[in-house]
Length: 194
Ligand code: IMP
Ligand code: MG
Image 1: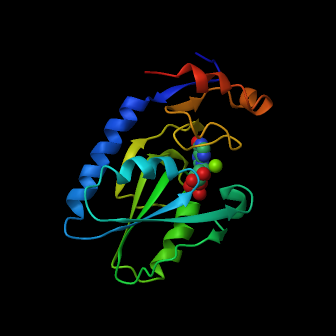
Image 2: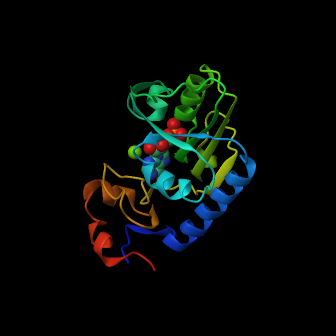
Image 3: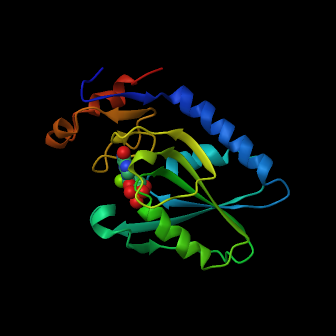
């Protein structure tokens, strides 16, 4: 396959892990009706698979945020572009994330949601890039620990590309991809792994 990127977590590993997470969450929230809040767009793919593995009544809701530059530049200040249209008072809220990197975005989102007085507030992230953390984050559910590499696929993008790759790839040559952002396009049709 390409020298620019390689498979980090293949689609079958992802499917199995998401199933495990769903079962764990279902066990933890028996008798409750959690609100799953997902931040567009990266986590939408994960949410779609995860919520179908949770055999409980639940409500998916969506937020969209924009950052001022990257997380470090903005120090986590984000602007809410789309907010949830549900009253969170007394609800059990699970924030569904694609990846927690510095933790700055997450800190802002958790503070925003906590101020709305939910009964509980937990985080479920597919990937935890823990080595990059700037502010501590309490992550109740983690799919995979992620190495300090840029990753794409399964919802994660590079300049809005590759969200529809079924596998999670690590970018081994980021300067090359920056030069040719379409370098991984052949993988969309080739099927990066079985
Ligand atoms: P944080 O505030 O640094 O934790 O930023 C997390 C956000 O940055 C994620 O929701 C992603 O949108 C983006 N991000 C961080 N690392 C990656 C990566 O390796 N690939 C794609 N997006 C990433
Ligand atoms: Mg992104």
